[in-house]
Image 1: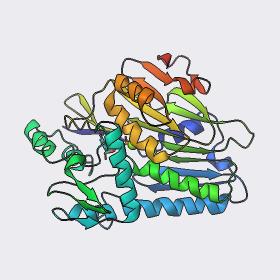
Image 2 (image 1 turned 180 degrees about the vertical axis):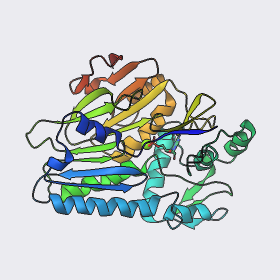
Image 3 (image 1 turned 30 degrees about the vertical axis):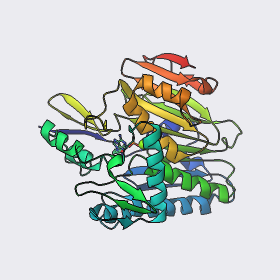
Image 4 (image 1 turned 45 degrees about the vertical axis):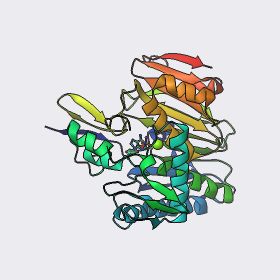
Length: 343
Ligand code: AMP
Ligand code: MG
């Protein structure tokens, strides 16, 4: 019988932040917690504008949830997905995300694909009704999905019958970008935003030291694989442990390999992407690089077009940290991992 093992509702890095002994949200000048995009979100802000900024942040993520949700029938995404076979004009904000998704799809050689929605549905991840689809079912779905099959131009999308888009791998990162804008507009000197595995730290801590962002150990929910000391940075983690089910002793997670239609088995158990630039980009890339696996992810980091740094946790108990994080990454003693810095 199928057994739901875990639906991760809470922000992994947020838990870690508190667990790592950084300031607890309740000690912050202002802290708001809300539930949106299927996850717990926390906004903490110091300074005079803290109340205004955190309340505006909450309203903004709820607005984005209503726009981008795949499961809410009244969302823009649901409207787009209901209009197959003919071009339909898309809300400009959604259009921007589709264009960014196309760019990441192309830059990653197709590992990032927002049209995998029918495949995720077949695995029951969309409605938490998990099942293992048959090979013939997956083969049929792989014949209709793929961003190269959707047509896009002048703000209009055309999806063939059976196709659907899902911005779940980029939406929380995009929301963190919007919240960062709100914090900046309100001159917040110090703060922290955690949207279920998507973290943005604003400035440093009020005492002037960097924020400490912990990376969850994919093997144990109360352990850490490492800690990053960051200022003004996005850090986004994708991991197979975040949403999964078990059937007949095998574990199936929610990040799909577009080549097979199966949960990606790349030898990685989590990927954290760090960048000062864009939460949406970190979010999309953490998903794509998880599917790519260690070797291709590191090649992408070395030669790719983006200014990012990575922490890769592997199934054979290594934590691989890219050189740009050398001075801000802290190993966890007795975690059972061996640590490598790569260039
Ligand atoms: P994340 O948690 O950001 O890694 O995103 C995972 C979510 O994105 C899943 O729950 C799916 O809705 C969707 N997804 C799964 N696999 C992919 C993929 N290869 N490319 C883009 N989106 C994906
Ligand atoms: Mg993602």
